[in-house]
Image 1 (cartoon, helix red, strand yellow):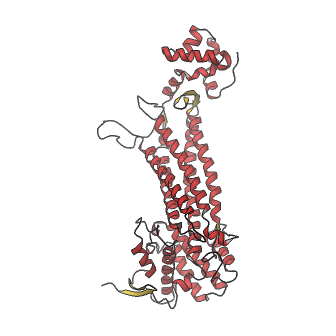
Image 2 (image 1 turned 90 degrees about the vertical axis):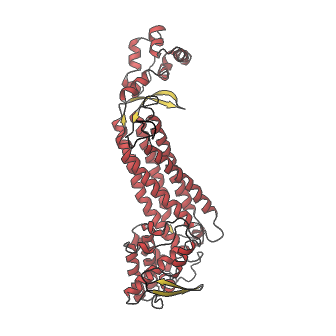
Image 3 (image 1 turned 180 degrees about the horizontal axis):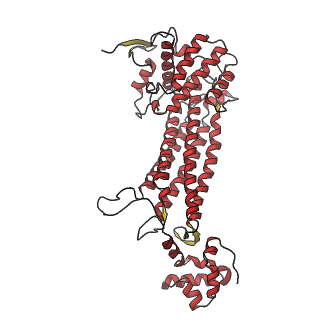
Length: 469
């Protein structure tokens, strides 16, 4: 039989297996919140951020005389062990939970307290020497510790996501250069428009992603303002004078990012607007990525009855009944991931709106939505790069022939023969199946072959110049 220790809270007593570093309040959370099946141990950056918060609080409390140096040393040791990832498995609270994140906060308090107790030469659970609430949580509330840790973790996770996203920008830019001389037909409303290059099309993908990287970085900056030291509702109850400023200073140094203390702690404790803006920006990125994947599926459609302008790398047999069929499975899975992220934007919006008076208790579901969205979309982007974009090839001759056989190229004749004459040629070509060249040059003799060659040279189609009579 495994040995146990007795722990109590104001609801009663429980037997806790002795090997566990978390205690009674975390144990209750495991019993109460079996929601996603995803514990916070799956978010190591969040655990690390909690360690940073507890260490900074201990140092600030020591400076302010709220705890003695021996207790502070033990808390800092325990926090460092948590920051190093040595106790991730002890963080078992479900990511979605009631209580505004109290279970997550207490999970951290209990684990760090028991690590600290062993450091001091005591047994786990001997809280009279080092208490989860009285010492590890000193001068804190869940309402400032949890959101401060969440913001730090989200900031760091966004750093990683933006790097992955930038890789997609680079991948498209490289294809833009590779395909810079591949003439193809541009389309609007799925109808022939005017010529362009495949390189221009892919370069535009790189540009639109680059724009969103800037937006994400701007939104990320909102996370640097935290409410650490606000305690329960922003009035700094139970915190010594000067503690918030000292704590945030230590926290910024430990994490290595320029965290600042909110100038209005009451407002900061209830406001979740930063999450709404960041998630909205992430949704914008997901929408753009999904649109690009739609394009890739269209451009590779066929191979003989579709656009067939590009070839996507074959990743798996596409049908259990149709031999030889290959489907665009990588863009498809990225589409689906984007749909998930777009949906999570609504989750964050509703959770932010659900705040009441001096606290928003829905922050755990915001954390879940944003953490999973960043993880899933990052995985999808890397998959798109590695298993699709880098292996795309162009059907150069097919693209060129479609341009020259298109009715849309009549647009280039507008400045010379006028819109009405051009429309007449387009109508006849559509009706008879004749080419624009046959009607304009050979039959109607509206322009010479020499002029035709000038207008429809590869250089002029790729970089159009205004050509007059």
